[in-house]
Image 1 (spheres, helix red, strand yellow):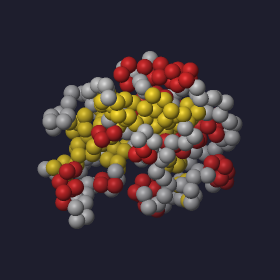
Image 2 (cartoon, rainbow, N blue to C red):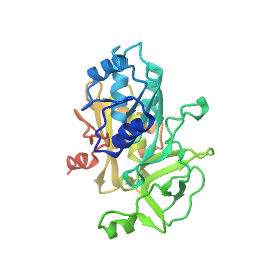
Image 3 (cartoon, rainbow, N blue to C red):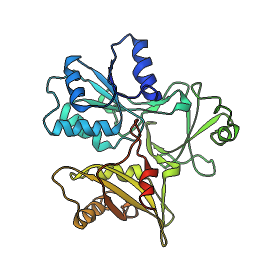
Length: 308
């Protein structure tokens, strides 16, 4: 296993370090993500698996498209976590390299894993999904009134199991907000399919309310990343007098593309053609970089600051 994730983050600590030691496998540590060095280590160390985050998977796709990804590699699969994975990213990487992408889900409060995907058989590998709950992990999908939603409908993911915390250290008020009658309220909006696979749509607190309609930023971002001109993006709510909030997209372009009003309109149409019309970005801003945490999560608060 090759791991460049910070070991102070529970994803790198457990899935990277602890799991490898438990299995008696070889762990190749990188102090930080460095694409040229990573590509060299893949061949030198005959790496077979990597825990990754979506921005790094995007970088791997770009390296493969540029012809820099080694043809003779041993990587069988990649685990994606820490942030929602755009389905297009998984498809691109598999098409370019033959590497299977497997998404999982968890949080520090759950030590951290609650859901895992599958590599085999082929019909069970669904990169767009976070997979199914672990053994002894019970899940519910509920609405704002704590009632369970119908199959396929969006709602908050609520869970309980032996891996969950007893509470936040010396913070009973915050503990009471997320732990109720033994159930942990994740704050994540999900849906399920008929095979009990779960799909994360977005964080409840990040949902945009456009004229009363909920818009999940991650869903819009996943579509934008399918556009050939988009290298990276982030979507946040922008206050609006008539609509309440509008989706505002911050877009990093691929080399060879130039920002323009025409391209901004093209991106808006690209989203509206694939999602419900009200989910399209009402404003597109072209930027050099989308700020992220070391674990790959978009720093939406930094994007919102630029709207002030």
